[in-house]
Image 1 (cartoon, rainbow, N blue to C red):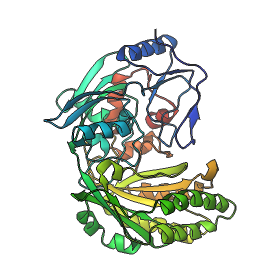
Image 2 (image 1 turned 90 degrees about the horizontal axis):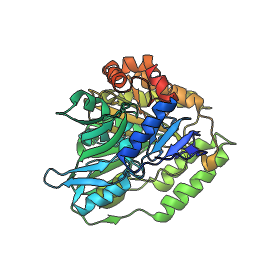
Image 3 (image 1 turned 135 degrees about the vertical axis):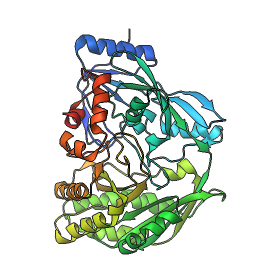
Image 4 (image 1 turned 30 degrees about the vertical axis):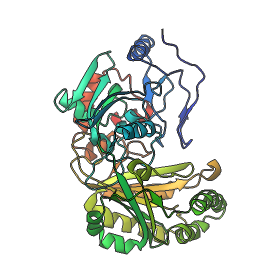
Length: 440
């Protein structure tokens, strides 16, 4: 009989959301997960499956049963001919990256953080950048799903295809993902080139930048014209770096956190901080060569609040300039750097923010220096208003104010997803407070 732990307190990575599940489980087998679901049915409890806990929202929170998949973290099969890997759902991408390297393989794209579980990455629609590349769920070619009734479904484009179209971005509400098969590529190195520019230049020449670099993104420093452009491209060069550890970490972490803490008492300092750190860390050209996953992953610094919406790519310039104007016209509204701008190819996954359109992701941030919350409501609401006006869709892992009415307008496939969810989980075993706002 599987045993759950009482008294466990869950907190996400940013320590912005938490909950106290009645019982906390760490199963080691499919049979144990089935026992947990049986127990939940007997006691009329809900079940929330969690991975790395990195989502900066309450999507992983529950007061009922929490199932942490960290002990189901094995690589089950590597097909070197097809370049595909089947893994258990709880494997961290940081471990998978290292194991794939032993086979001369790699995932074609990764998000900024790899201390995240495979099922959570696809379940929330994690993305990186590159207009030739989709969000991470597009790399999934098959998965297995344990439903509320205890049935195990094999899903791919040829088996249970409609469920597969939904389950590649599942929000944790269709069942328990047990295994995932990823399409890989031969291991590759990336040359990352970072150089300064201006907001006007990058927006005027956006198409040119998108063509010039496979993985192009840029950082805008609010309250200024400053932009840092980042190109990442395949290379045969050996690993090297012109970055400076002292400036990147001593200044870019410890000094920044201290100054942002000071700015909680003097908000007008934020404008100066953004300009100062651009000058200190981003005014020159920097090159860095390494294995792909070491370039894709980067330091997220300290705890933070974030919002990240995907808008149609053709709206990029209009939306960014409107956000800039809002900040210029409202001096009391301050915004931490950076506003990170990334791009992704359209897809056919029902709840993908990139469903049926190439997209621009625009990520805003407010750091929490030494865990202290900073005023952000006016900035947040102004940003959300601009994103909605541009036809945006919020990143599922991140906090937003949208409800079912919003999602029905945003997603052509939303009702189809709801129908699939209701068929697989008619009693709502896998719902929580976050998901109730989405579906009711």
